[in-house]
Amino acid sequence: MTGRDIIKNLHEGRRVYSSAMVSTSPLWPNLVKAAGVDFVFVDTEHTPIDRQTLSWICQTYQALGLPPVVRIPCNDPFEACKALDAGAGGIIGPYVETADQVRGLVGAVKWRPLKGKRLDDAVRDPKSMEPELREYLEKRNGDKILITNIESVPAIQNLHDICSVPGLDAVLIGPHDLSCSLGIPEQYDHPRFDEATRTIFRIAREHNVGAGIHFWLGLEQEIIWSKAGGNLVMHSSDVATYSRTLKSEIEQLRKALGS
Image (cartoon, rainbow, N blue to C red; front, side, top):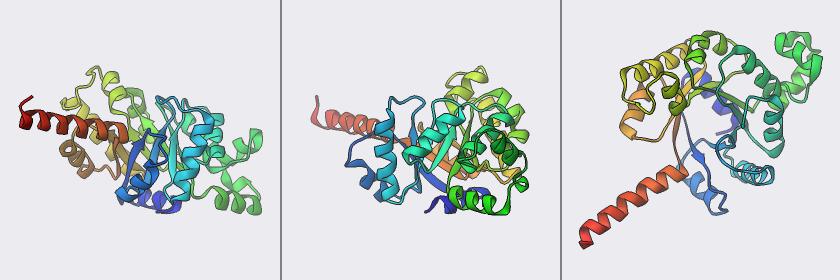
């Protein structure tokens, strides 16, 4: 699936599947490709990946036809540009709480390489650009995906404004930060957390923006939330999946072998 296909599906409510990748092993990309995901999520907010390694990861997945969507360390448009220069197929902005933060990321992702006042004018009113320039930029950046993390109560309160910004393709719940913002840390089965998740999905879909939650603690709950409106299915990560499978199989072996 190309970046343009992913963007179209997100806006139209069709499901898109992804998982977070941490491993930099050269053996990993082909295995991930065979697993059937539509794109990969590469995290540089919480994972110590330097710029050279990030570029290797992005270029490798791009060569396999799997757009690598990079979560940048902070909501700085220059960080987004650096990741795109490394080969990212899109950007995830962490802990977004305002529409202005989204506009900054839209400028970096959708209207690159414009800068300064020219960029401000383009973000405010794309029609202000010369037709040739607008056509060039839309063609150049039309496959670049923009997702923002919704991880706090203020973000939910501002979500209608956030999802009204042209150029935003999807919102992705960060469950740990959101649970802490709600005052119920790691209580993902709490009614308030469930209500917040469903509210985020509902508002995003009202604006034809994709919605999902990055969840790794159980397929059953992940399926329930996806059926409740989450069409961005961000399933677990390579590390979590490996750890969970290894733990389960070692426990089975110890039990079967009596040691």
